[in-house]
Length: 407
Image (spheres, one colour):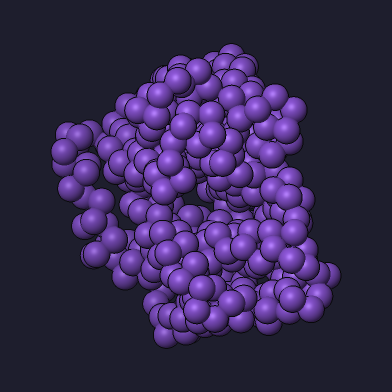
């Protein structure tokens, strides 16, 4: 740990990260990640406006996620090689351009290419997380990562609701135009608050950095375990949020997209409450924080399964689920950043690949579970992912979280 932090003694990272700057990082991350999820309640409007067939409009979500996945692999590792301030500002400026192209698209080709580009650039959220971990002092690293990650989760959960409201007021294009304006304003703010002359953490070539990502996870068992836990918790997360719209949009509920989006606000309470997980990780309780959170994740499905009977129990389950997922996610990142401080951008890029695989797994299997067994099938699937994660944690409890330094 000391070795990784020693190369920061001549720049601002040794001064720590102020609360207001951390908050700006969180807002910037939430705004950027929301761009990926705005489209979900807007698919019908986009299809009608551009004459896209119903069977093809789902590509809106697919191309955005593909772009995001490519960005995780090819952009995020650049944070270990170049000044992160320039990298972040550059991505935000290009995101403004991509958002304008989305908002003004007149053909499906322009729309798909613009959305893929937007997804590719949205990985700036992971560069922000790695930058926050670098700027924060070791004693406050988990707290800083927790706050920025909370901003990401809130951005994900609020995106559907905000998109529904803006689309009702001015159409689907207004959603992306508004985001372009807010993103441009954020560029000016980030230019003012991001520190200058931050020394890159790696002197290796770009190709060498890319090759090192799988090696870091395969050679370090704790890294691999934390990646697998990320895969499982986000499979659980995706299982719930992908299928929630299906029962709520049908009788006896027949809720609108805006009304369904309100459930995301309940999830925000859990995301905010989980901010304390980073503080616990800072104090050395990362392992037990993970275990308790994974147990709560399993319990949440015991509440969620009552959706046809009780909405209050569902809402309680939403809060507990998001609290648990967020707590494990923050703890995971605190642990992996501490193990390899010289490779934080590569670590977050590789870690989020596990996240992407889990999200895709949950989305694909949950819709099949709902088709075959209804909401009970979805709840059983979510519970199975949660139980597997808890068992994995228990089976690897003996592994030391901290690296043993060579004498």
